[in-house]
Length: 457
Ligand code: ARG
Image (cartoon, rainbow, N blue to C red):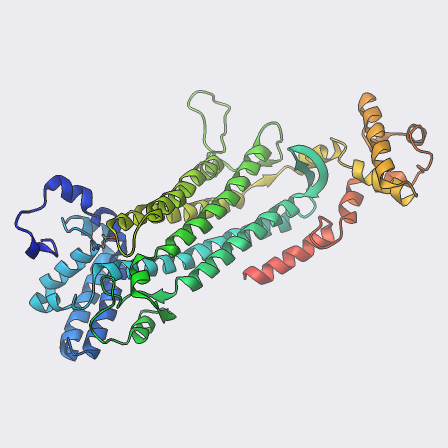
């Protein structure tokens, strides 16, 4: 039976009920709804709506219900309650009779649902932070195992300067650090308890909302009842954090797809995270990475969706807000899955160091070194840039790398070139030179790995 039957003469049409009901997705808030209800029952004792004995009876029944939903959450769906709040109340009444009908005194589903979804979000933040740290740990480990794997770094997807696979891994560790801290900030802002705000104007029972907030593990109580029941910023913030992080994961996936292609052949993804073609027997496709890249779309879609839903809403609660749930549930599940799958992808990745080195040697990625060499010999940078450009055109025409040109060949372009040029054109020298903070020199990368380990442990 609906919670609000008294005012109605006719029953709801089935088509409307199907359209309106949210139990099929908000059943996921069962635990939060029950824990919030226990907190509320305690507050009702303090204002003499419930006796201590009544509260204990309710708490025992609610705890029983909690065990039931934990062992079989899908069981909730075998019911035609309007939403999870109605479901919990009906089950409570089944267990303790009319005492259960006292629980909703002074409370509205508006402050109740605001509480439930915030509690759910807070819990998910902690789980997501764990998954981020695990992925970072795996990236750091992969970096350590590939400290000396030189490969080309790209701009415009053109070979630019040599880097190491380790340095590439550590770039993603940085992105994930920011994702982590966005969750940290969002958590702080969502740590205020809306319960006790009533439908919109506050509750008529003089409960101590700060105490209630603390009992429910919040840092403080929200300050304005209208805002409390209509605020969904925490959902928007989490979806923004999810979208940004998914964009990071998508770029990671795209790099992997390129590195794993026959053209690059820099890495080999394991059989455990690739799949075959139904027609072409030779194929081994990077589906896991493609799905990470693809799923980014739906997470960003959920962010856009909730922003559009909230945009024109007058204060305070409107039923439109029920649309917040499917998006956040799906997007955070997807984000967490992608973090976990990215970790899994790295688990037994093989870096083909001969191939990465071979590619790093091609593409004249040591040309900047030659320009810097001329500068060290007194040639102004703009001139040296031009000279090296000409040297590269020549080297291409004779199918040689810069390091394979003879001194005589160099001297056609600049008199200052000497035997010491070969040393600086080596891959090792290209790496070692980039030793300012954040650079690719093996020393700096080792430092970055060390620091990351301290941060993420
Ligand atoms: N299922 C609703 C939601 O998710 C619960 C709140 C209903 N409140 C109301 N006044 N109809 O938003």
